[in-house]
Amino acid sequence: MIGGVDLVAFVVAVLLISASPGPAMALIFRRAALSGFSGAVPTVLGLELGLYVWALCAAAGIAAIVAASQVAFVVLRVVGAAFLVYLGIRAWRTAWLTRGDGPAVEAEVTRTGWWRAFGEGTVVQLANPKAAVFMVAFYPQFVPVDRPLFATTALLALLQVAIEVVFYLMLAAAVGRAGVWFRRTKVRRRLEAVSGTVLIALGIRLATTTR
Image 1 (cartoon, rainbow, N blue to C red):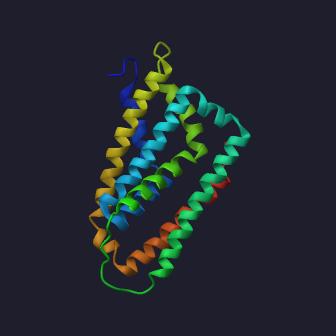
Image 2: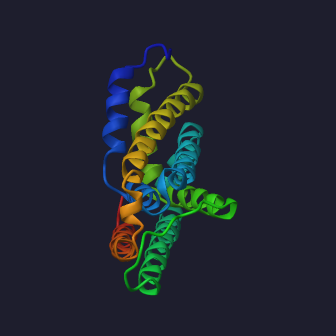
């Protein structure tokens, strides 16, 4: 139990944040649809690792420096936007290469594929300067003045990670149930095209974002 913290308000806030559309939701939906539940697990874990790192940076004051630094903010924004656009173009390329129709394609999660998905999630989260701004503004609202900032933030971040892992894995499980349909060649091609467009749009939005 985190003494003095309004846990109900914190949990509600985390659930609302988790359900908001964005790069995390797009990555998880795409991965679950094309690779099933097991394929989405590394993406979720990578995203949550990035979130926890940003939370610790916020507690240590590093995130505040990033949020206040014009250079750091722009560098992260460009890197994050470029990576999202890269993922979108790669999805478009896959859609182009899988033209035609055919039976359902079974997806297999290899060890290389696992780490690749994990890395994608981590990079997308860490290269998002809005995460730094968010952490700086979000956690102090729930840390009482008489509690140690770093330790309390670290505990709250662990709680947020746990909530989001459960939430996102439930989403992945729901999407993964329709995996056979999603992995039909024609449907897969359309899904890749749509998800690629969404990722590129998110990249452009991130590139043009301000504080």
